[in-house]
Length: 309
Image (cartoon, rainbow, N blue to C red; front, top):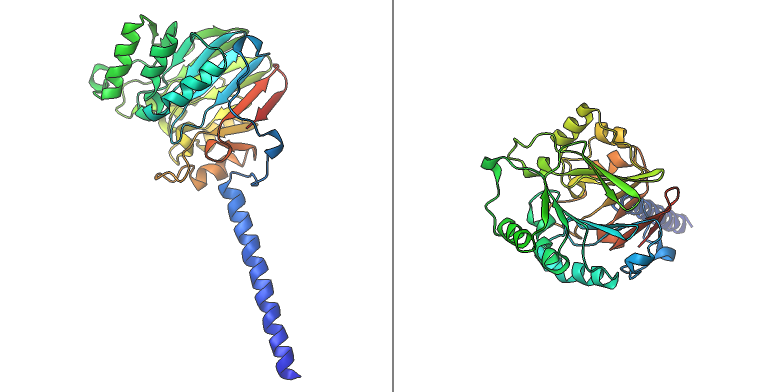
């Protein structure tokens, strides 16, 4: 009998240990997924929007899954703005998505900065949709990139005679009934390309959306110090969730209700960083990642924000 009780006790210990390990793994997975379960949002799962631009009601923003890169399309009142365009290998996907929405010409093409994971597909997009204006940060002569893709970008812009706009903080532009304001960069005299990222705040009705490119902590500090109104309902998290971005001070100014992280699955950089996720979760647990959700679409009537993926 004593041996039988020992055997049962051992089995009980094994079961308890297994339960604890499973629970710990579940908690770890919850943090890795950015506060989301594997089943969150399945009732809202959609593919790339094929709604014609002319039929988009209110504001629509689609954050495309372009691996370890950035690409977002904003549509309002029939007007269109593409912010970044991922690596060159995603040009066919982006062009197909814009075609499906009936886009013939872009109103704005925005290059947040000049790394290939943000402008790689932009020359092909410009060739296809001939934007009226290309918005990009100013560069000091000593920091002008000598990369092939930057040369291709300038060549495409020149061929289609698009207006080049190098805005300064405070400049405002209209996108249908929406307005977007440039908040940064404030310092172009840096060799860190990430910290010359255009930071744009798009406002529609009572709702606002912040796009940060790859802005890191130095640029975040500059924008905070400028006194700019950073408060936004939706934050496109800087630099794919890098540990060098999304400081607590910056997040405290933004106070986002939703965060979007554009990031590649199983990337070599460890993005999004665990510390960044923890920082974000001090403000919201509504975190949506392109490596998990694929394309993410936000729609708003100026009051309510609806998210589908």
